[in-house]
Image (cartoon, rainbow, N blue to C red):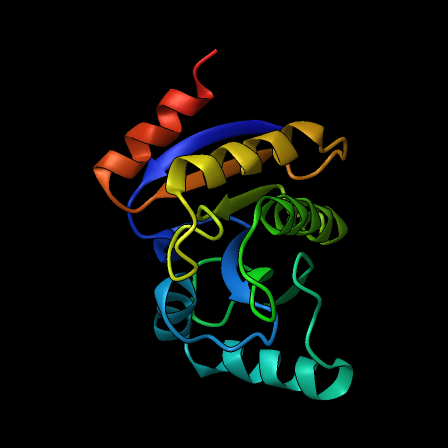
Length: 166
């Protein structure tokens, strides 16, 4: 899997899927989730609500997919690194790995990731990014072919670039 860095708004990603920094109740409130809700339209939250009604909340560390709504992606993968428990090394790593497995199940070739846990959850950005990169390095599936890590600001994108340097 190739990993590259992009600076900017993840909701503008044009590819197969993007990962939402979700809570385990799949409520699209603030941060990346709020941006996904605003840019993607109400159908994404409606699909999340229907999932929770049928199956209950997901476990922190798990991920599920919905359609992409009005976004330029087919799917949104909701990776819960927080919710009923705070973001931690374990939950960020598990949510990243789970999102990759969901992407593979969808045959998604390109997936955009925010740095899970680093926004609303308040986890240190560079540490969360390092945990995600470690989880990505362990992924052995054929899909996705490309993971794009988004840093909203130029400074965040630069941190990501430095972490990717050999």
